[in-house]
Length: 110
Image (cartoon, rainbow, N blue to C red; front, side, top):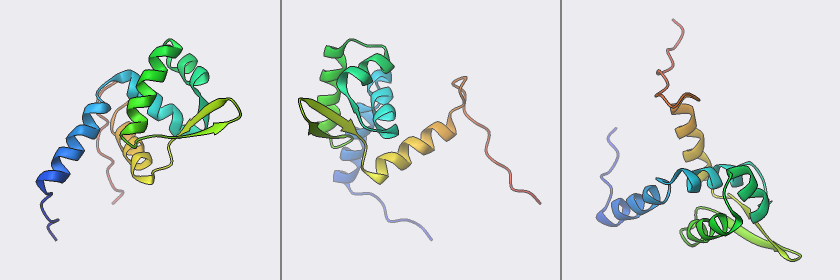
């Protein structure tokens, strides 16, 4: 069965989403937020960037709908709730080895 061709609007939205994830820092922040709920300071420390940088990048990701945020006291807590974003992260990191190369396809047992 052939999937229906994506619309022009879908292609444009997908390209915008992928363009946000081109930055290793933004991709790292999304991956971290997919692992749990963290404030900006914790995310910045784990990503190895200043808090101001993390905050700016998180704002872009939040506006795009790739991450969610909620208040916990005085802190903004970030997480990934969208199952599509979670699946995308799982797929890309299953496709790329820790050395940064493309993982060989899994072969089925015969």
